[in-house]
Length: 194
Image 1 (spheres, rainbow, N blue to C red):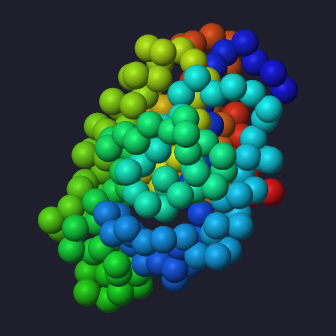
Image 2: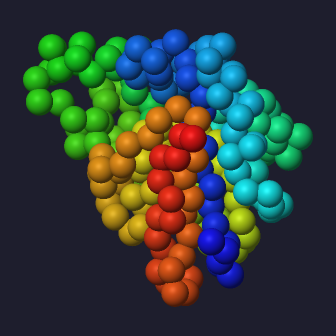
């Protein structure tokens, strides 16, 4: 389906050892697994044959490697605002481990001690969204799950905590765009993995 409006393609990085085990991976640089590398190589074939005016990546090794293996390394610009949620004291822990010491904890509601709250991540997403809307061009973004979940919430005008309602698999492709005009941001496709 073609559209006259610009679209924003979101790619979650390929699998890492920590993503496959459910460990929160914010600022720790973990390489892709062999399976993650293979899936990242397949991303380009799952994208439409089009020119991306903007190719931006998180500074993480996993996002940069995914963009390189997908064939966009030479066009990629690293943007610090696209970094994954800073999990602070919860870096490297699973949700189950966190809940054992802090029952009822919810990342989107409670944030992380010595890390970020949803509003902090939302502010970074808003910076990128503002730039994209100003450029009004088709873009390709490589980042991580929790950041991208907040990103889609902010794209739609929801509070950052609204990202809790969106789930992303590794090397998934999602597409944001507009419906009738540029005042109606929408999700065109979400979490496509094959």
